[in-house]
Image (tube, rainbow, N blue to C red; front, side):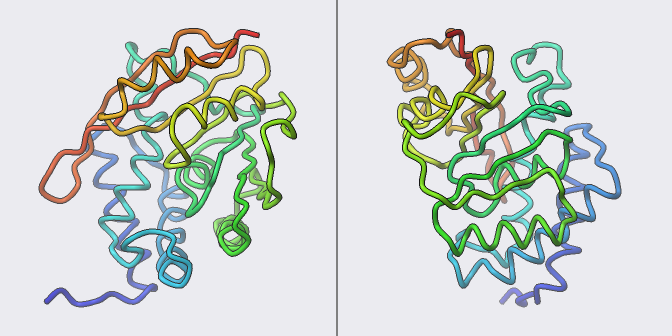
Length: 236
């Protein structure tokens, strides 16, 4: 039987697991970023089981998987063929993350970039976790918004809208359309099986250019998991 780790032990284990996974992609993380991600792993273990944030908050390998998946837009943007991902989280850009939950991807991306993130999470306990995590990780580029927002209440003031495990693609795209500036980009994290939905979902909302899809695989224990990043620019 695998010995259960205490939260104080999980943080360093997440630190090491993330560093190893990122190195496999040739992505060199700073010591400061890895320290913050280790702190996140510890906090997720402390809060996770109480709030049902993830299925296995006390499993460092599972947490590392979600952390690295969250960072994939940055990892893949270094490759010339993935130009749609370039500059999405540059300093000064405003990002809205839909249904931030346990902090994937926005809390992780905020730790790695200088964009400013608004994390939209209507569940108050989860919003409290996000606020505590942002403080403990020393992130000053995050605002947690726990007020419910209907699409009609959103202002088109964001440069990027992200969504990971938020809703069906069509729902996420409608919400993104309400929040994006002209020229802003929607970024959806999807499973490979959802690829047939992408074009139809974006096509059903006026004002988006045709989406571009970037496919990748991540190792999860003994199997490779196929994921997608779907990016589309708001033209109107």
